[in-house]
Image (cartoon, one colour):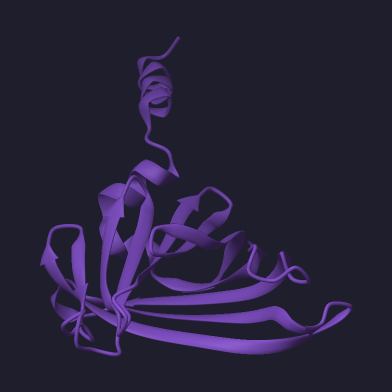
Length: 180
């Protein structure tokens, strides 16, 4: 057996998978335009406990190690359950680096005195995680957690919304990269 073949076999045996490469690459691994679908679960409405969503996510890295993310979600959770109304929800956030693998939203304010949520992002284990926190005027708090995990076939999305520590919505889906 040629020595070069043996070296290639050993290299392939220990080659890290896409998630490990994404963890090493940082935010650049998530750059691009991603599209797909998700299923949302909630107990808020008896008629819309399980709904379909269309999702697209665009991640662009910038100078200085920051990034911009835009996500659009077509929600179907109101109106007639047999023909639900579609509502487009769009969110755009810009993040600046705090330390390696951790970013702060440039839109952050004081969580007790601002209408905008406090947000941060981090990359861990092949996942881009974005967490937002908002404190309402009456003291209750809401957190939203978005986990976007790279895999060989695209990106898995997991979303959890909690109010005062109680989960009120969960969504999960798959996206594929459609542009760089």
